[in-house]
Image (cartoon, rainbow, N blue to C red; front, side, top):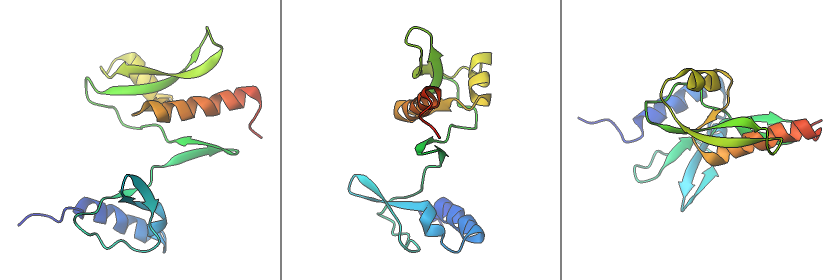
Length: 135
C-alpha cells in the first residue's frame, strides 16, 4: 500500500487547521502556470498540485521572501544578499554551499535564498531602507 500523493501536504494542512479556522488562506493551487490562492478546503485531487504559500517578510510597504533557515547540501547553489562597495548598494550574489564559515555566517545572518529573484527582492528592501523609503 502506498501513501496518497499529497499525504505530506495533507499533514502540513492539518497542522495549519489546528492554528486557524481558515487554513486554506495559507495555501495555493497550480492552475496552468500560475499559483492561485485557495478559497476553501482543498479536495486533494491527485493530478492537481498544491503548496503552502511561500512565507514573506514585510517591511513597511515592501515585502521579500523569507530567507532559508536550514543548511543546504554540499554543492547546492544558493544566492545571498551582500553590500557591493563598487555600486554602494545591496545586490544578490551566487555561491555553492560547501559548509564553510562563510556559508554558515550568511545562513545565520538570514541572507540566503534558493533563487536569484528572492535574493533580489531582499536586496531591494535593504536598499529601500538605506534610501529612507521605508516608513
